Length: 288
Ligand SMILES: Nc1ncnc2c1ncn2[C@@H]1O[C@H](COP(=O)(O)OP(=O)(O)OP(=O)(O)O)[C@@H](O)[C@H]1O
Ligand SMILES: [Mg+2]
Image (cartoon, rainbow, N blue to C red):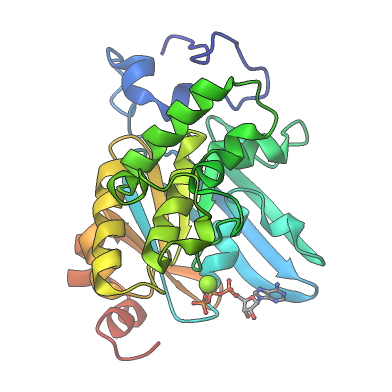
C-alpha cells in the first residue's frame, strides 16, 4: 500500500498515522485482499490489575473500522475496565496497572513515544451517566474538547459545535437555547450533548460505556439511531447489558466473563449459534 500522510499533511513518526483508520481513503485501489479488513483497534494479550486484583486476563480482541462492536457480559466481568484500556484511561486510576498492547492506527498506543492525551483526543468516550458541565452553556459544553490546546477561532468553533449537535440529533431541541446551562437539559438530551461533545473533536473511535442504560425507551431509540448514523464515519465500541440493544446496533459482539473473552464474532453468530455453552447461557438470559 502506498504510504499516506495525515489529512493535515504532516507525516507521523510515532506509528499512529491515520492511514490504517481510513482504508477507503488510504488505499481504495489496493490489490491486497486483506486490506480494508485491518482492525481499527486491536487488543493483544491485555492484562489489567487494580492493585493485586487481576481483572483482565490475556484479552485479545479487535474492532473493525466503521462498524459497531458490542461488549457484553455479566456485572464485574471487566467490560468497563477493558473499554478504559482502549483510550488509556485505566492508567489514570490509582493503583491500576496494565500489560500488553493495544494496536491503533498501525502502532501500539502504549508505546513509550505515544502521548496519552493525543490518544484520548482520537478515541473519544461517552459514559453511562451523562456528564455535561452543568453550569456551562449547551454550546460551551459541545465545544469544550475543542478549546483544549486549539487555536480555532470563535466562528469556526461555533460552526463545529453546531455541526456536532446536528449529528448528535440534538440540534432541533436546543437551537433556541444554546446559551442555557447544559445541566438544564433532560437526561436523554444531556447524553446526546455528551455524544456531541465527543464527536465535535472528530475522533476516529467512539467508546460508549452503557450510554443508554439510564435513559427511557424513546431516548434510547434516539441514541441507537445516532450510533447507526455515526458508524458510517467512526468505529464504535459499546458496552451494553441490553441484549436487544446489542442485536440492534452491533455488527460484532464480544462476550466477556471473569475478565476473559469467552467468544467473539458476528452478532448474528454470537446470538444465534454461539460455540461456547457459557455464551448461549448468557445470551439466552440463563445467568448474569
Ligand atoms: N476503580 C476500581 N478499583 C478497584 N477495583 C475495581 C475498580 N473498577 C473496577 N474494579 C473491579 O474490576 C472488576 C471489573 O470491573 P468492571 O467495572 O470492569 O466490570 P463491568 O463488566 O464493567 O461491570 P458492570 O456491568 O457492573 O459495569 C470488578 O471486580 C470490579 O470490582
Ligand atoms: Mg461497567
